[in-house]
Length: 371
Image (cartoon, rainbow, N blue to C red):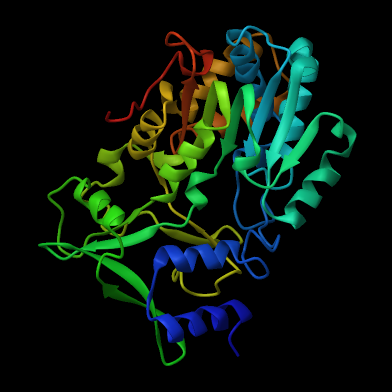
């Protein structure tokens, strides 16, 4: 017997015809009752389905606190300062950032309010439990539309990679879209026409030449998201950390199957259509597209680099002064190229500032975007 979400998807296909993969991924991850994230089923850490920077321990958040405190100083040390986080999951990053600010930058901690944007009640409840001791510091909103602040920093760790993506295929002469259809009660891929003008325009920007059958993803949701982020603040910064590539690497001719992946218990699942709502779906971030969309939204790129150089730039003085063994191991995991150091990238943007702002996290920048 099929799982409930599979039946829901099959019913929609029966009523409306094949759906873009973007719609399938939206249901698989964010269906209110059965979605992988919305239901609270997502499990992070060594015993979960996937591993993040936060899983390593508090060091990632503490190093981000250093960058946030510097951004606060650039904004004039304002007393009206908001840290906005999306994709907060269990609230661990919020706890680590606030703990780092309290210990190392008490004046910034005193000025800051922390706003978590969380559309899913069960995740908000989990975060509230985790952050109970910081209840006077942390607020919640259901959407970015509810957030308007004079000065702030928006942070996210592994967020755009979870946005629903379109999957497209090069036929040798044109792009087609990989749709999700049904066959004998099973979900299957089928080729179809490009489903929107916006997607067609995005396909035109994919660099070639490419081999026939080349399959990849287009993340249109990221452009809409960065516009919403830019609208939340009059002045401030945006800091996004995620795994991804600049455009020429993302769409390399040898990357013939794209970056779309499905994971459960740290193992890659061969079929992304199997077990919707029970496994994680993700695609890498095209950072050039994100940077271009940010510029169109009024954000200025202040830095882009791989996580290795970002972490070293923020942590080198701290570790020069000595650190205990657990911190050194965590730092190695975060920055080492064989672990998370090259797969993950950091992009920093500013809004409403008169001039470009050198930020400590990007002082050793490598891996620049194409643009």
